[in-house]
Image (cartoon, rainbow, N blue to C red; front, side):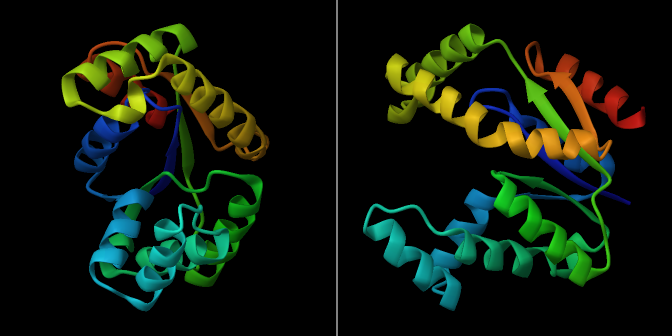
Amino acid sequence: MTRMLIVGPAGSGKGTQSKRIAEDLGIVAISTGDIFRANIRGETELGREAKTYVDAGDLVPDSVTNRMVEDRLSWEDARGGFLLDGYPRNRTQVVALDEMLGRLGVELDVVLELTADREELTQRLKRRAEIEGRDDDADESAIRRRLELFESETAPMIAEYESRGLLRRVDGLGEVDEVNARIMDALKG
């Protein structure tokens, strides 16, 4: 049974690797983006609350995000293990996740950080914009701001998990199978 987080900057391959890891380990991959979309689409109470923020162009506050994540972690398919992608993103959310897991009577086994050179990530995201037509990846200065913001926001969270002995760093650059092999090796160690 594995309960884990995956973190890494945009373009590091989190989405691709999350699916592979979940399949390899027989656990559910849980993306906070998917949670938001499902709640909004399903018009749940939390989804309606989140939609008011999204429609206003505001960030959904931690209080709403935390409740959505806790609800999702309580589902039957997450009891056998999970890979959480996109949460927590800051120190406050780390504390909230600790509390959630405590209420569920479980704890994290590992935090996987996918690392990559910033210049390579910038080029990778620009290619993704061309291939997938993603506007959020088309502007180089916007990409650089996103990468800097990721680093500044997540550094305290990553340091916290490293101090707990949970962090495993893996180079996220390379072919998908090659990166996946490095991840599986890191999870064994």
